[in-house]
Each structure stands twice: as structure tokens, then as C-alpha cells.
Length: 300
Image 1 (cartoon, helix red, strand yellow):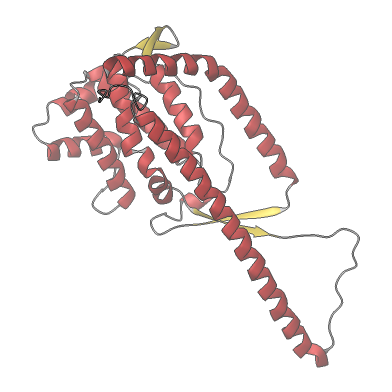
Image 2: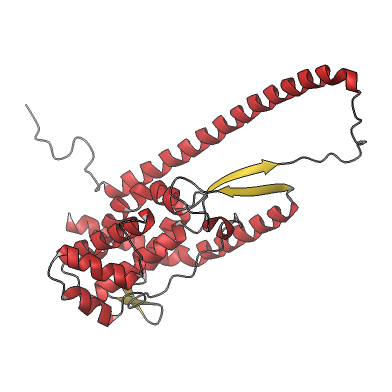
């Protein structure tokens, strides 16, 4: 099993090193094309806060299209320095560790803020996992920073970007598993990288949409169409208001029907994309199995 995981790890590492420049270049081109198309569209975007989203984030989400993801870098001591890690190491129990962690992360009151409570749970469970894996202070700091950068990439936009975030996560992960200074260091061993990747996939990416729902505002699209070359509409006489109301009700019914069909089509595409992602994650999690017929005793 270890030999199979090592071969899988080496294949992923070679694929990441070969495809990283092209993927970053492709992502920048995609974002540039999206920005150009956004300037030609005559649509207005309005954000509405969800059940737990606050009103303050509406202005931050006014730009619907997120900026490109940052370039993967070494993130040791990025958010939790050595003094912070020593304070966390001296804690006697989980409750004390959560209090110190909330102070270090700048969380106000997790008992009253749902977002702060979710953030505290995310990083406290990550610290418990690092302690169970016997990570050093440097490895624990890098693991928390990797999770923090992944969370920032997730909440940067209310739109679905799970595939981009997964590519970014694997790129940052390999920055701490391959010795190639100054771009990457061999901070984690092969088994530790596999364990950390499995933990993030099973905890964060499995609940990716829930994190996005909590930390990003809901988005509504107000579409307005302008036809060129048509005369402005004429006002109806006062005695024909009844016909106007009937016509208005008919147009409203047809628009609702078309919007329902469009919403159903979008939901089907999102469901298909989610199924493809789930199948890919399942293939990555399952170890390579022997083909049927081999390994079985021959019966006479």
C-alpha cells in the first residue's frame, strides 16, 4: 500500500511541476477574457445577504468576478509565527487552546458570531489533526497557513470555483514537499503530505459549498435588454388600461416560465459538474486495485 501511494505521489508531483506554469497562464487568460466580456454585457449585478451573511460584505462582493489566485509560495510562519505556536503548545486542554487560537486569529466573539465560530472550529480541528500526526511547529504553522489561504480563495467569490481552489491547494502543497529552493522546500515527508491532503479533501472540500454559503453573500442577476433601432413605446389611452393589465399578466407568466426553464437548466449543469468532481475525488481516494481474476485461487 505504501508503494502504491508513493507511486501515486510521484505521479502527482511530476504532473504538478509540468502543468503548474501552463495552468497559471491559462487561469490568467481566462480571467482576462472574463473581464473583457463583463465590460460588454449590459447586465446589473445585485448582491443580497444570505441567512448568515452580513450587510457589510455586500460592497465587497460588488465585483462578481474574483481576482486571479495568487502564485503558490512557501507559507511557513505566515499567519502563526514561532511565538504563537509556542503559546498554543503550552495549552493544557482543548478549551484553553481554542481561547488562545481565537485571540491569535483575531476572532471577536465566537459565541455570538456564526462565522467566527466556524472559523475557530476549522482551525482548532486542524491543530488537533497536526498534533495527532506528530507534526513539528514548522509543519503545523505551514498546514494552518495552507488551510487559511485555501479558505480565502474559496470565499473570494460567491460563484463556484472548487476546481481552481483544488489546483491551487495541490500547488501550495507541493511547495512544501519538494526541495527546490527558493520556490519550494521539503518540509513534509511523503506520508505526511498524503495524510494532510486526505484530511483537507475529507473535511474542507467535502463541505466546500457550505463554507461558500456561509462566508459569501447571495447573488441575484437583474437583466435588462435594450433593442437598437426601435421607437420608444407609446402610452396607452386611459380606456384601455384593462387590456394593458391583461397583456402585462400574460407577459409576466411567459417570463416566469422561461426563467423557470433557465433555472432548471442551470441546476442540471451544476449537478453534472458536481457529479464529475465527486467521481474525480472518489478515484483519487480509492487505492489502485488489482484487476478481477488476479489474486484468486484457481478452482479445479
